[in-house]
Length: 433
Image 1 (tube, one colour):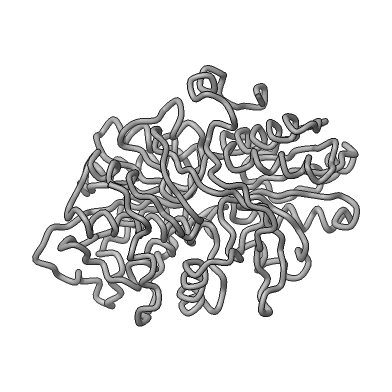
Image 2 (tube, one colour; image 1 turned 180 degrees about the vertical axis):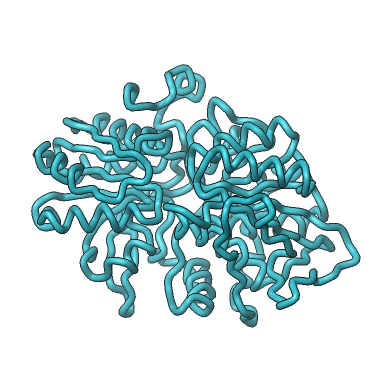
């Protein structure tokens, strides 16, 4: 079954209702928000339906260092149901939100609660690569589908791929950043230095850039790594400066580290002297709003560009802005929203589907013009979609990431045969391809 777009994605002009945002919560197991998605009644009662129910467990870091990104991921999911209603195809979608604070052990604790106590039909999330790998391993063993709106861990859809885990609103980390390396070399940069977080997402992001850059004739002369939780990047910025490379490639996982890095970078005067390419999350809308005009002209690489010339994008941005103070939606919002739209599209066509049938039905959609552009899935349940080189520009008075170069149909293999690619070690500090 191939569907040219999902009609639900064009329903954004429907009458607005008040947004429902998940509250920031502590790490105890009894702090979940359990209610039908999109139901904003003050008493929290479900909008009753006589049909079946799809029970969704949603895990995201809505406290801690990645709280901004995590809350936005939840906002995107809830925005879709607020606009379209939580009953589709005779099925009521009910959502329980759990906060994992970006901690893998907490992610597993919350996943166990959702599956074994709440009896959810599907787990959505979490956000970070290490938490996503942990949850996917558990849910696949438990026989429960796991959909990933944002997580970029390569092995979710490579060495640890399974029929119950599917990427719905993101790409693999190396996949997204590979075209960034190609672009940097095409711009005439001969040497590069990289700075990425010291865990799977960072290793894979840096490896993707390095592979693209060096295959295109460039040389990565130095690579630096920082631990999660870093807030003072001045030492790392000094190392970038000392490397003397033509361009720096910098990755963060969203939330506070993006603005924190750029404040150090600009504070030491490198904005005018050191070209830099950032990843999807380090120069997302949350960073742009935090730093304002200081980031005009900065470049980033992502599978999402809110300034893309598309009716679907404009409608999505307008709907989000109406509910969130005129702001533009971030990548994290888009991932949550797209995941909800996919679930709704499947329920509309099939009624209640669960288990492998749910994952299979989603993977058979082809988006001609989704929020991310034209999207399909490979046999490992990973997205194949465009990657954009973005520039921060002022559009109608709003700072926006506008695509200045598009790489179409980017897959996760970076020019390799899948079996050949997976025969290599996983990316780490010691193996960068």
